[in-house]
Amino acid sequence: MGVFSRFTDIINSNINNLLDKAEDPAKMVRLIIQEMEDTLVEVRSSSAKTLADKKEISRQVSRFENEAQQWQEKAELALNKGREDLARAALMEKKKAADNAQSLLEELSHVDDHIAKLQGEISQLQDKLADAKARQKAIIMREKTASSRLKVKKNISSDRVNDALSKFDRYERKIDDIEAQVESHDLGSKSLADEIAELEADEKIDDELAQLKAKMTSDKKKK
Image (cartoon, rainbow, N blue to C red; front, side, top):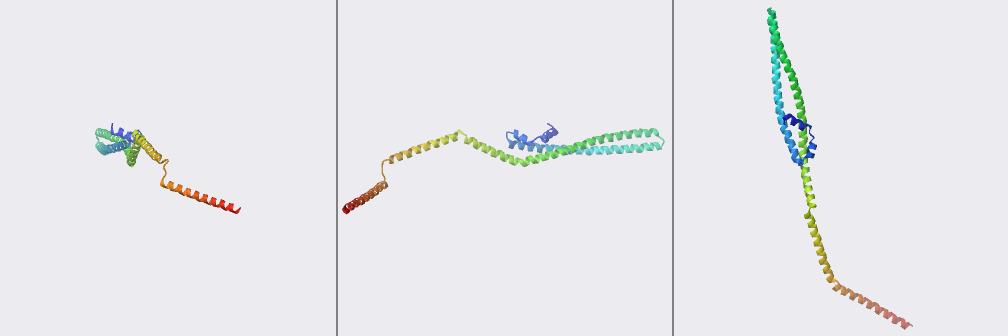
């Protein structure tokens, strides 16, 4: 692919579309930047050559214009000397030089147009290059973050995690069974605190019973 065709492709490209289609956005943006930088070097080199050509054409134009002027002076001299034939021949040479100068001037105009378009395209490419470089760091960070999140998501949904959770469930059930066995051994057995509490309760009942008997005896005596 030639410098200018590749250059035009980059100028007309939409960086976001390129990144959307890329499997590795970080790698893609590095390639885009490298391609732009390489193209800028080539285009600037070509631009320098075109400017050199312009200078050479300008020198040729000046040379032909000077030559035409010289033939004009020679024609006037020949005519003053009565040599119309020589004056005619000199004017013919003048015309050739003038035609050559005019042809080169037209070519020079095309070169100027080409340089102007080239400078505009270089400016566009520089803008795109600056945009790509400005977003390069953010794109790389986004790619790393997304890759890390994807890795976590895959691990969370993997069979290993599910197996681990199943093992936790089994361990919890085993612990429940052990605790149930411990509680079953405690059923029907009384602790020291329970026996003392029962004694205290019995003592209160005995006190109430004694008070009731005393009351009934007192009531009978009153009768």
